[in-house]
Amino acid sequence: MKLSILMPVYNEEDRIADALKQALAVDYPCEIELVVVDDGSRDGTAEVLDRADDQRVRVITHQRNAGKGAAIKTAVDNAEGEYMVILDADLEYDPQDIPKLLDPVLDGRATVVYGNRTFGSHSAYSFWYVMGNKGVTMAANLLFNSYIGDLETCFKLMPVSLYRSLDVRSRGFGMEAEVTGKLLRRRIRPYEVPISYRARGREEGKKITWKDGVEAIWILGRERTRRRPAASIR
Image 1: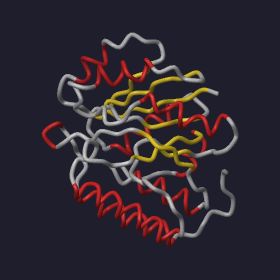
Image 2: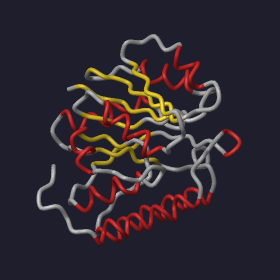
Image 3: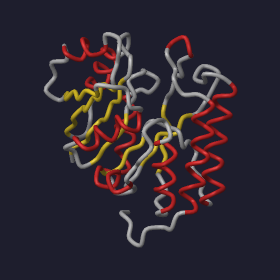
Image 4: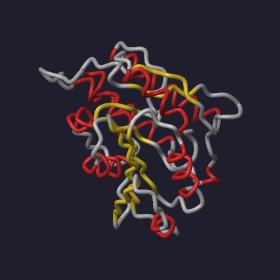
């Protein structure tokens, strides 16, 4: 199996070099590629990416910022692996956890795996950030009669073909809710594994806001009212 690690990047000049180094240093149980999409960065991100010399890295550039969902779509369209996982470039997630996400797939227990964050005082950006995340996740559980622990997690691992079949249209952070809503609507419930996490603050460049949470709930409601596809990938 080949794993495509998809990394959307926007104005991460100070972190992208470390993000690449950490992702490439992991001892993966399979072949990998790292597909980086520079989503219209205006700082020195592009110059740092130009210096990447690992053959496993491919860089694609958006001329203008289009949003995380749009960057992931570009990465998925260019992915060559059978499976994919999203890894943000902000160093909040530890790529050493990716092999743990692969374990349930490699031993046949799961097709879709989410990394579940356990928030603590050392890992949470703020009280309201954590409550917002829990609120969006609870909305999904109520709407779809499910019990997932972390809808907004970046670590979503699944077959590339499955993600493409979801036809995700959200261009921004709403893609997290859209992906989960469409999976749950198909009655595909993610297998969850615990992961480590360290949130950064606004002064460090954190971009998600309360408006994204409101949009996420609206997207979940929209997906809940749609008819479930007759056939689905499991």
